[in-house]
Length: 268
Figure 1 (cartoon, helix red, strand yellow):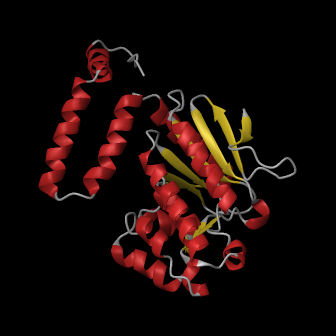
Figure 2 (cartoon, one colour; figure 1 turned 60 degrees about the vertical axis):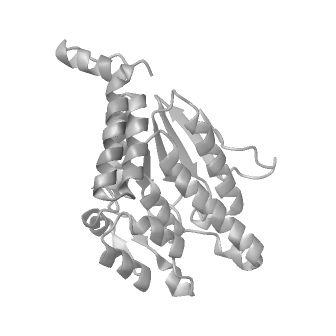
């Protein structure tokens, strides 16, 4: 099924499309003529869609994609220029940051399907997803510095994916890196030809969706939380989470299935 994430005006083209298939939800940025720039409307629709998906137990994996030639060109600079006042800008950035955090907070793993350019906040969107699969034609940049706009908020996600000096080089120069460089530096997980992109995304999603939803959700939450801790605190926290995980019914089923040499039957 394909639908707009929220109800747009009758005459407006939906800026976000949702497709559900076999436990995988694909959210497609749908502003091809604007290179899928994140307008206020698109941000609202994406936030609403993620909030809805988070509550749906049948959805195991989320894919973020883009229509047209680009994945996402960042914020809509025309909208920003027209609405250049502190209240609008602060609210826009706050809502964008909230959406990026939601990608991390929802129980389902999120995969970025990157077929074209991902610049500024578009690059941040890739970095904020749990996983990313890129086409060989994809390119990445935090190019705001070229327009007098240092990519401070994209830098939050970028610096948690790339080594410090590589992140700073992207932020300071605004230069593009290609998909293979993004792979080497840790921004994406896999790089394939354009013809193989959809199959590779679905292959990765399929490898995840068959796992216990409870275990994946708990593990994803713990992974990001322990990253912000010192080593000793991280082990203490991870030990508590591991204990909860082992005591869960799905873990008992998984162990029994392994010992009995049969596929597990998850309760979730």
